[in-house]
Image (tube, rainbow, N blue to C red; front, top):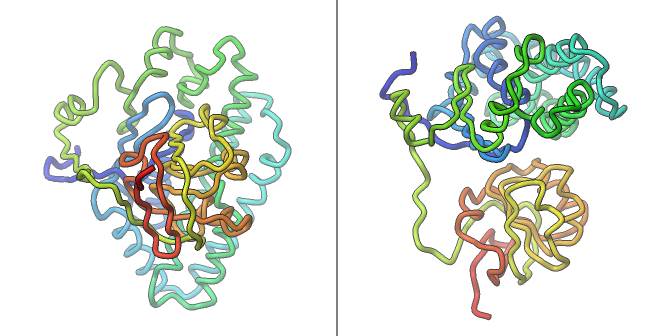
Length: 340
């Protein structure tokens, strides 16, 4: 039972299939218990048109970091062992990702799901360890190297899920995005139910809620939700990922299906980027994201192709609208609307 004084806040925005969100949830609430004797509270996935707002309990990431820190204190071999296991698990997945072929059976899907679960702990470690102050420089470097290998872990895994489900259930088309592992191994819901999910669903504690808005859901489940306060502003600040200063018209992209809308010379404003965004990123003059760290996809690509990039603004996609004329000052991390 969730405590009614527990406060949830939006941490991520992702566009993946339900099976990927199920994997995400099972990892952080179940699979890590055996290793740490600790698990996260259930996340809330508020999904509209396949795009999920992911809510965590406040301080969850800090609590996770403390758990890892205690492990490091008690066992100096902990990080090297975890990274070695992570590398082995990741190698198995990478072969499947590179082949870009659908898996052949439902049993193969289940096996791939389990392999991905084993790998996710390493993904977490690769992101958490570099921020632990007393971790050795050697361990931090090892974690950073593994982070580079796994930056697209969820996206690559999601693509195999969707590619396979389309092969196994061709009659469902895009509706394969809205089925769970249990349903895949048992009984697929009626199309009418999947169509409801395709409009909007909430995934929480292994249950799927449809025909209810997020506010009503929170009241029903006795959950406290905090949202970033959006004030009337023409300026947003973020973290510099690649320096530079440019002006251009904004193109806000929330869903992947709209990526082709980006025109040459526009400023790409999005929640975060993935490899699917590359064609748009080559056309755009600069990138601005709500999320991300210095090793996120947008930051890496910006440095590779030399385009100004500001990340981790939290609210850029809600402040700017497609067509706004803005100046991206990626020397100082400020994006502001300007007069035409």
